[in-house]
Length: 56
Image (tube, rainbow, N blue to C red; front, side):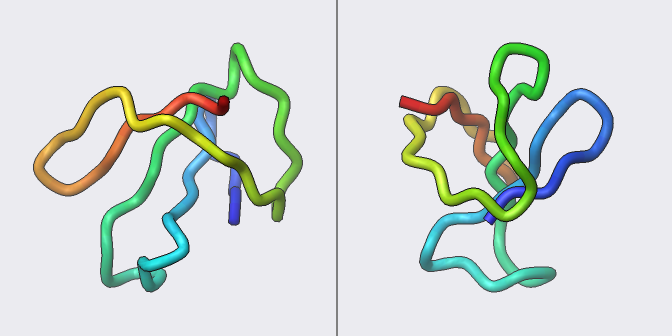
């Protein structure tokens, strides 16, 4: 599930719960996604709490 904030989209994996688990961050400038879309993405980086990904 995707939600847009500023220049990035925030989502989560199919195994994560909202407000409890990590978020998946996708760059909104290079990708067009609609809020609520389900996306297949490749994880490209990770921080302590979040994952950075790009759609594939």
